[in-house]
Image (cartoon, rainbow, N blue to C red):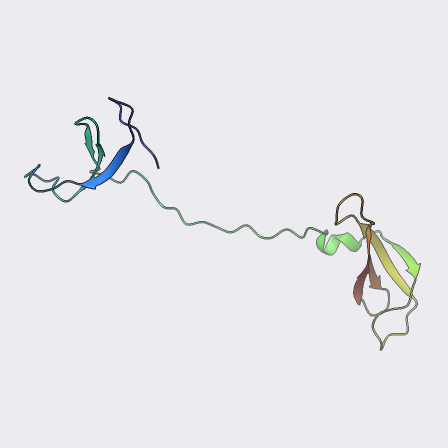
Length: 118
């Protein structure tokens, strides 16, 4: 945080109140101090509060489980070597820049193996 002096508009620095300047309860406390004029402000209370941050759940950019609802089928060989299916669901998504071709995602009808082709 950057603060400026209300008297001369110079930047305030943080320093500790030395015992020779104040013999009272402010000794050892932090203060904002101006290097140009005699302005000082003792920090005698908490001026901020740290709050625990909560992480948001990551969103599935490609649609998640609902992305395979209402998709078309295509005749293509399954990438799983143990599956003999020749049909797969497919959908196309533009995941790169607009001048690049769309990426086609496939999901086997029989074994649910998924793969993609550019």
